[in-house]
Length: 463
Image (cartoon, rainbow, N blue to C red; front, side, top):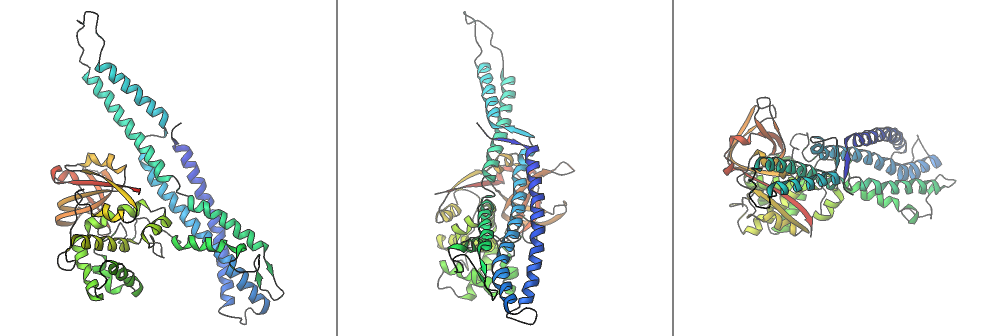
């Protein structure tokens, strides 16, 4: 038995789940609005609007118990839609090829084609051995091309299965927690004074273990998660220049997070020198950011797993992607490893596997990293490489264009970017969609000598 995928069934399941989520979210939104009104009545203590037993019941039952369940339920709805969006993105390469795929049947077809190739490559001869040899090279080449095409489709199907396996696990697990919460609340009692008492009589005790489950989920799942390569300004991948433009306006808590990360590697560095890091990060950070983008995309649907590995959240409280924390830590790690002064002579990386700072850094987090690297490389290499993960491209003296094809800027020297897609414009020019400085751009790979173009992709596994 192999993998089986059908577009019709898949679309039906996705549309059905989207409709269900819409109904759930609408109902929960009404509850949340009602609870917000109750909160306004409760205020910070007994008041004229509510008093006595009504105030106690509103606070201890509706706000302390029911509100967390409703709020987390709405978070779950946001995440189910986010997972569905990701699912559709992962499914795209299959939709390009077919509407139904059966791995076992495809592999059997490959075996049959290989048998034909073998027979054509070694045609039978007569007893005398005098049978004229037939040139089967053309037929063999056609069959080999079919094998490559089918194996490409099988590879896409296997990758899709890996990408979506477990994509809803957090929400499936939480559904039991929510069920426990509803059952627990219903099993509690209200005293004559209106105070709610949970089963067992102790808040957060055995009868209310669900409170911890809700808190754990909420800690890593903000209400409206954003895509790693999303449509918010400055959120199309990470931006090595973020601190140059935003350091002075950042909140003290956001600055402190960055300062604390830097001091893991440079414990004696002053706040002033840490603030100066931003200029070296901007000048050298393109490869660092492209590497970071790839692991963020790897964990996009598993924020709890990311936090367990790296020690800080994948998403900020507002749902935006936390690019800066991991970028800062990786940059500091590479600087310290190089032995160079990060303020006066910061280390620049490249896509080439000889520069192993990224795999070395991730090894400290428990990853085994393998890389596929090509130089020379071209547009034609992207299809097979993109099946493994986020592709990085390195160009020298490159021109960046806006998505509408208008010229954006010229980048002198070497520059690395994450490739997020490929296509052909109306004039027939082949292009890559790339992430650079947190923005979406287009580059035309056919404008460059393949010998001066690097392409690499990382595959992540656990140690």
